[in-house]
Image (cartoon, rainbow, N blue to C red; front, side, top):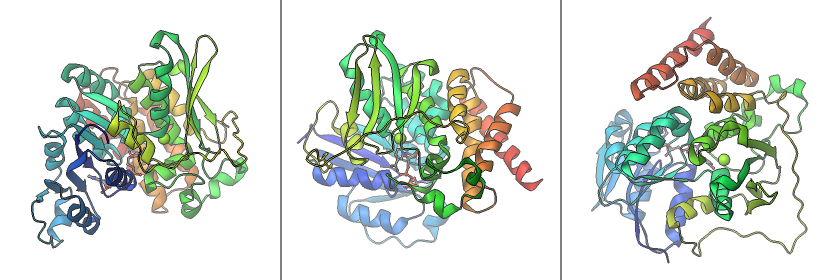
Length: 384
Ligand code: NAD
Ligand code: MG
């Protein structure tokens, strides 16, 4: 049992959204007030019938028009993107789980921050694109941003062992993805199916490709900078194939605190929902009765050049995150549609990032313009 919490789940039909609902099924005191989805409206209806939220938002108007909603009783059906902002800022809601994928999740995450909610943040792209605006806004509105990304949840938990001045560095672990042990020469020939076969995590398509290029870790370096207020120079990445140690914090005296659990997103989601309490839930526990080895080694930045981009963007900030994120989103979609090669994803991110007109303190409209410019550039490159 935890304190009673009313929750909005943005992106309830996705991988994180479904894990979140499994947590709600097991933890008393959590009540779902609103859910949203874009394409899988049958799943959304199924969820509404089970959880009986006050609101269901179908984000895509065209898809909603072509779908026959059954009678959902107490649940009101709302249609369109603007309704995401509405359910992210309802008075009766305590916690907003931001689990939409990509920059599409930024406006609703922003609405939640602006209205002073506790945001359980899975949508790392919101911080990559607009970290400075999100954190400034949270400071003004009194909103709290709690990490759901497993590495950041681990860091958040480990940081409790000391004060901010006592932190020496933050070490983010990475599984290394499906190509960890591949020969660098073979990376050009990677197929979509190979890239979608992640060894330790079962996730949505976009983040699975990001994990294969290691762009995901780059985005997480930027995310860590904003969540914990640390410079890029204090963040490191280590390969840890077992995905048991979710990240580590090294303190100035040489003590390193790690957080360990089986690779399952329900735990970081539950921790954000019940924080500051810890309660019994559906999450699996480590079986220490079996032999287990934990390996750690440095990443191969030649084979995974995407890794450098995150450190660069974390250092420079400004409009660079919006550009990197937009090109990456378009490049991942193009790779999934077999329009570009796997290695092109990182190459085109690097090239367009280098060409962009850097703005150090962009406003939201300037970030949107940088995002649009970057998408036009990759489209020109693909059509050249
Ligand atoms: P997913 O593709 O499984 O689900 C995405 C959700 O967003 C769905 O509910 C979908 O309907 C909704 N959505 C997609 N496009 C939309 C749009 N344009 N407007 C409104 N709604 C839209 O993705 P996921 O794997 O659950 O990831 C969600 C977020 O969580 C991502 O930012 C990802 O980086 C982050 N994350 C995921 C995991 C994981 O294990 N899946 C782990 C850490 C972080
Ligand atoms: Mg992660």
